[in-house]
Length: 416
Ligand code: C5P
Image 1 (cartoon, helix red, strand yellow):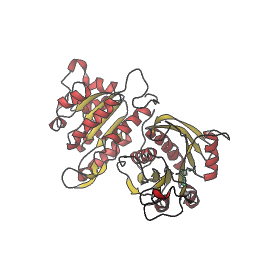
Image 2 (cartoon, rainbow, N blue to C red):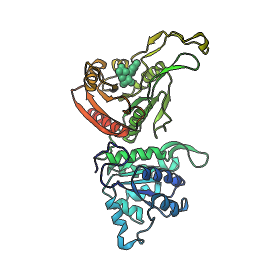
Image 3 (cartoon, rainbow, N blue to C red):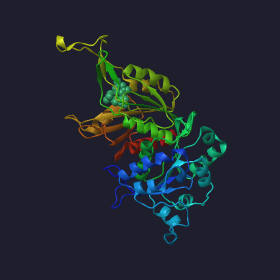
Image 4 (cartoon, helix red, strand yellow):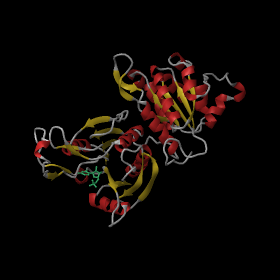
C-alpha cells in the first residue's frame, strides 16, 4: 500500500492510484456517477465495472464519459487483455457502490460469474463495499451473515445510512452520501493496513463543532470550528462497528455520518447537558468540540442597537466539560480530549499538549498545531496523540479520517 500524501486526494506515487469502481444494479446506481466524479477529480484513475443490471439504471456511456475508460460487464470482452484478472490485480482500491444484497451474496460466496465478481476475487488491495437496499433485505439474516463473512475476511462493508428509501419507506439501507464514500475510499488508500471492525459492540460518544454563546437574539460569541475532525471520528468509529452518538454543535455544512445517531446542540451548556447524559453508558468519549470558554454573563432579550455605541460585555466562564466528564467517568471508560495549540515563548505545541493531558486527566489527548492554513476548516490534519501511560505518537499529515483512524487504533488496543 502507498504511504499517506500530505497534499491530500491521491496517495504519493508517480502515478495516481488505480481504483476500480464496481456498480451493482440498484436504484442508487445513479449516485455512483457523483462518486466517480469525486474520485476522478481527486486524481484517481478509475475503471468502472458495472453489473449487467446496473446498466439498466445508468448507461455505459455515462460511466465511459466520466471515467475516460471503456466499460465492460462480462468476462468475454477484452479477452486478450485478460481483464477479469488484470483489473483486480492492478487495483489499489476496489469500491463497490451501490453493493446490492445479490452482489454481497455473490462476493461472500466467491462467485465469479461476471467481470465485477471476478475482479473481487483477484483483487489483493483494500475492498470497500457500500450496501444499498431496502431495510428488510439489509436486516435479513442471509445478508447479515454475508456481511459478517465478508468483514471477517478484512473487506470493509460500510454501514448504510438511514432515511428515505425508494418509495415511501424509511430505515437503514440508504446508500451513504458520495462525499462520505469518497472520504472512506481515501482513508483506505492512505492507511497501510485494513480498517478493522474492532469497535463492534462498543458505545462511543463524540462531540464536534463550535458552540455559540448568544449575546442577543442575533449575535453570539463562538469558536472557529468546521466540525470536520469530530465528524470524521464519528464516521470512522461507526465504520469500525461502534454504536456512535455524535453531539454536534455548530459546524460547516457537513453530511451526518451514516449509521450515527445525531444530537444537535447550540451552547456550551447544552453541549454539557447532552454529553453528561450520553457519556453515562459509553465505553469511549471523544471531546472534539470547540467549546467557547466564555459566554456573555447575561442574554439581552432584544437586538442591541449600535446607535448607543459599542456595548461593554461582561463575560462568565463556561464549565470545562472535558474535566467534568473525566471526573464522572464510570470504570473502564476511556476519555479522549483535543487540544489546538499554537506554541508560545514558554514552550512549543507538544510542551503545552503534555501539560494539558496532565491537567485534564484524560486517557488520550490529540494535540494539533493551529494557525493560518493549519487544521481549521481544512480537509487535512496532523499532530500528536499523547497517552496517559506516557505514549506519544506522531500523527502524520493526512485526511481527518486518517487521524481519526489512528486515534481509534490506540483506543481499540487500550479497550482490549
Ligand atoms: O481547555 P482547552 O480548550 O484548551 O481544552 C480543549 C479540550 O477541552 C477539548 O477536548 C475541548 O472539547 C474541551 N473543552 C471542554 N470545555 C471547555 C473547553 C474545552 O470540554 N469549556
